Amino acid sequence: MTRPHGSRDAGQAFPVYITVVAGLLFLAFAYLAVGQAAANRNGAQTAADAAALAAAQNARDQLAGKWLEDVLDPTTWQGVFDGSVPLEPSCWRAAQLAAQNDATVHNCEALDPLTYRVDVQTDKSVGHSLVPGTEDMKSTASATAVIEPLCTFELLNGDAEDAGDAEDTALPQLNCERDWDLNPDDPADLPGPEDLFDVHLAD
Image 1 (cartoon, one colour):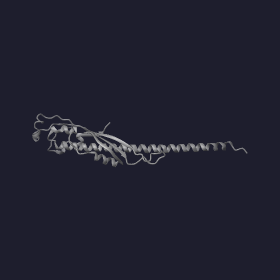
Image 2: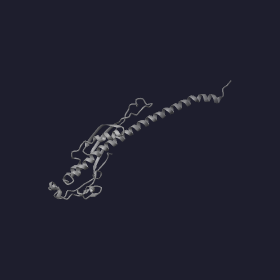
Image 3: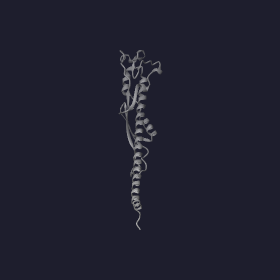
Image 4: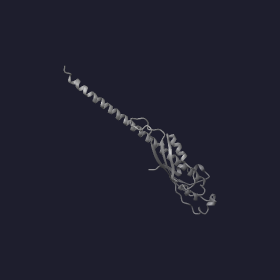
């Protein structure tokens, strides 16, 4: 007895169907693995960015503190804005921020007094997937943050000679995003760290 033509076609199509479904499942798992790796890399970059900014912001705050300490001596201001004053290490802040983002700092350095570079590695691996060898892979990333002085000023006549008698010397106007006519007797009206310096990631 002859089998119906439709049944024979269905039997032939079934293996093709299984092959197509298996291929689609493999592609789905492969895309999942790619997505896991991309998410891990994005996490590493987020951690590196946060760590570099944290180190630079800590240094920025120290510079602002140095400026405030010597606000009565304008001859010292340029050294503060250039970053050429002694500062405490700031990379401990980078380590803190990296840890908060599930990463570890492998290197943190001041490329110059106003620039910090940080390299991190994620604490978590990509995880299990169909792609061999990815289970223990961890992502790395780097970021550089820059401290940019926002202010300029012009020393008044006699500032250099009268630095030792600073209390009797008028202070120059500090030109930042706004102009500051400084009154050291009113600390509430003195610029803060964010007024003196901008901190941002390098382009």
